[in-house]
Length: 120
Image 1 (spheres, rainbow, N blue to C red):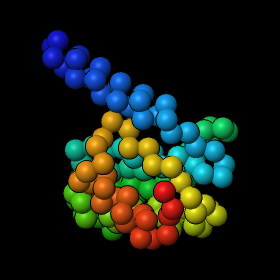
Image 2: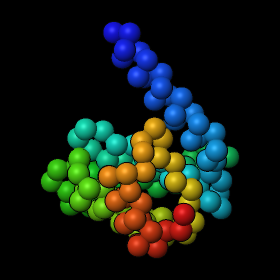
Image 3: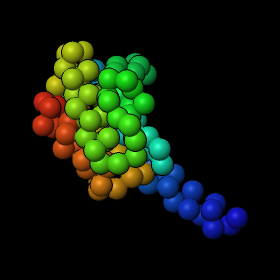
């Protein structure tokens, strides 16, 4: 049990380090990424007003994903959030990877969002 507490504490510290550097505003919101064992989620957040501007996940019917825990699903979610962001008039964002490394699903998501028109 002690090892689990240590691992969770390290994860929370990593999240805090990233979030302390990345703040979103109306002109350039924060693109927050969350990955679980089954799905991939993301949302655009304006930290000044505390509002979610747009969101997408592998659970959405628009994503067209049968299994949400792979790089292919993350790529589709990246394209979907880029479409929703441009529809909301957002072109530039700040990527908040949370406690995840910029590797694998997170990197595939970011590259797909860039290709679809978002500027990081």
